[in-house]
Length: 170
Image (cartoon, rainbow, N blue to C red):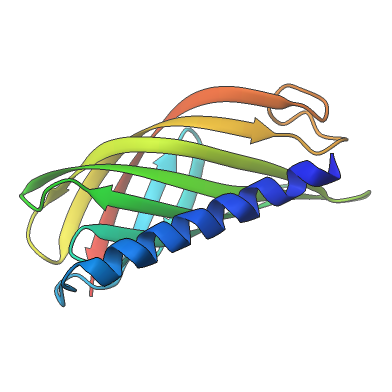
């Protein structure tokens, strides 16, 4: 199980190398360089910080926090990369994500679950400063040896998901 813990880090490293390589081959766009997104996925809300590293590539660190009274706290840390296929008002994209969900119970030991996945979707730009988007996902969840978050005690589960978001760019 220890060897599975490095999978999200390797995935993030591969995404970063891919994004940096692609960015160096393209002209950088000065418009829409950094933004802040609010996301809704099921009952979970997250904050993303999309950073345009080239005309068609975005990397976005993501954080989410859920507190459950008398139970504990979930802290979600993720990294998303998206490659936009065109730059129009409605812009389709493909991408990848990797992250960890750290559950800190009120009493007991913290658990670390992992998630890696692929995504595709579209973003509607109202202009250079505001957009909304929708994303479809296929994710592989990897449970901590003591966790059943993804329905398996210390195992793996494949799932699908959707997410909607709104972004303001600076």
